[in-house]
Image (tube, rainbow, N blue to C red):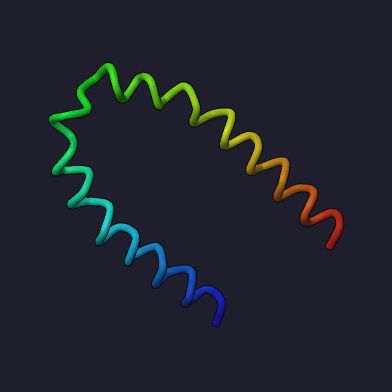
Length: 58
């Protein structure tokens, strides 16, 4: 049951985010994309550590 909730929320997010990204893509440009790209890997690593702690505690 939980997997269905996760899948539905992902599809809803895609339906909302794709038009927004297409609308604001021209305003962002390459400089804006590189500005935000430097935050992606630290956020991924933090989320992996949090998930690991969650699994170990559970």
